[in-house]
Length: 112
Image (cartoon, rainbow, N blue to C red; front, side, top):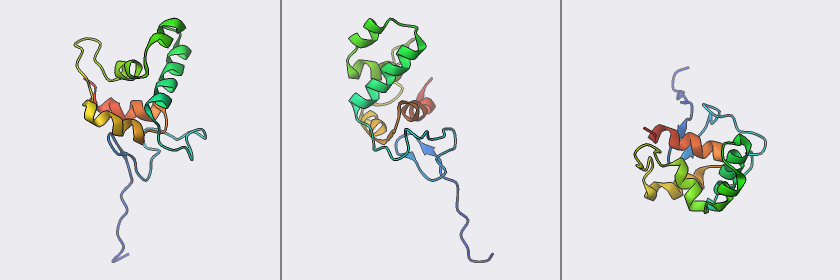
């Protein structure tokens, strides 16, 4: 059809979150639908829940981590200690995420 614009599928951007066609790489669960942006405490709680479910570390050690510490553990290389995400961008990434899974998907392109 002449004159009609071709709509591009939307994709996940690390800093600005999902745009249209947000199912690329991550399908939103019913839990995430309608959910507002996260704050650090919400994200830290979901990351703790992921760690509990994996059972690799005792709960008391996970609970001993501050919100910042558990979040930083996901953006820090265990080999060299480098941060994958600049701390200036971290707050925006957290705010844009609707779940721990979306946060992890957003930081994945930055890992090394």
